[in-house]
Every structure is written in C-alpha cells, then in structure tokens.
Length: 160
Figure 1 (cartoon, rainbow, N blue to C red):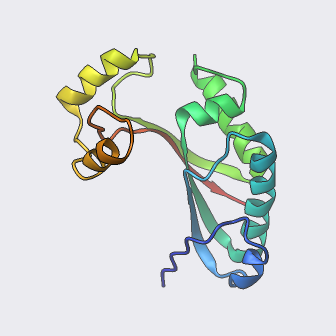
Figure 2 (cartoon, rainbow, N blue to C red):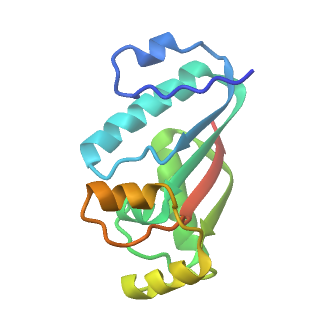
C-alpha cells in the first residue's frame, strides 16, 4: 500500500488526520527551511509525525540540498568525512533519528566549489536540459539561460 500526501506540514491538525503507526517508510524530500524559526517548527512537526505515524520498524528517507544542510549548521564546505558525519548527526539528532546510511549525490565528480560561469559551461556540456521549464521561465520571468537538471543532495536513511 502506498499513500502519497502533498499537504502542508503547517496545516492545523495534519498529524491528527494521518493514520497512527501505519507507515513503514516516510520520505521528506527538499522540505527543510533556511529560516531558523520555520525550521525549528518543522522539526517538531516531523518528530511528531515519526512518533505518531511511523511503525516501530519503519524508516525515514531524508533528501536535502548540500548547501542548505551546510548553511543550517554554519558551514560553507565539507572538508573531511568526520565533519560531514557530524553535520549529518546534528540534523538527525534534531529530528530524534538514528543514522542507517547516507550518501552525497552530485552532478559533478567533485565537491570543490565552481564559479557560476564555469558551472554553466559544465552544465551545457554534461547535463540534461529542462526543456519544458526553461521556455516558461524565459517567457514569464527575467531568466535568460536554459536550466539543466542538477544534483547536489544528501540522501539519508534513518530510523527512530
């Protein structure tokens, strides 16, 4: 059984509407916030969802953009595996979760920073274009370039 729910976590009574101890797997993808107050509020709600709706043997999959994760914890770059693991542990600690596994996924084969103009060249040569979104953005916004699909995310598997 699969249930796909796109409700706002900030809707009053959302957790009460979800089935209790029902889900074996919960995915939170790109639903983390830069604003500290909103982030803290969302962490409380996520913990409540995990405690209320996840089965005792259930898993949580978190997907978060690298730059956002690093910014939340006061870093701009990961210099080593221990530093990276500490950041992951802080995120999971805030959510009351234990790490099972994580992986950093990127469109490039390096974590080194790249200038915007160099990334544009890389993207044009190597990444798939967003052929439907780019024309809309050019038509309705001031965007003058073609967007490409990029990947720079941490994928984290955890448990309560």
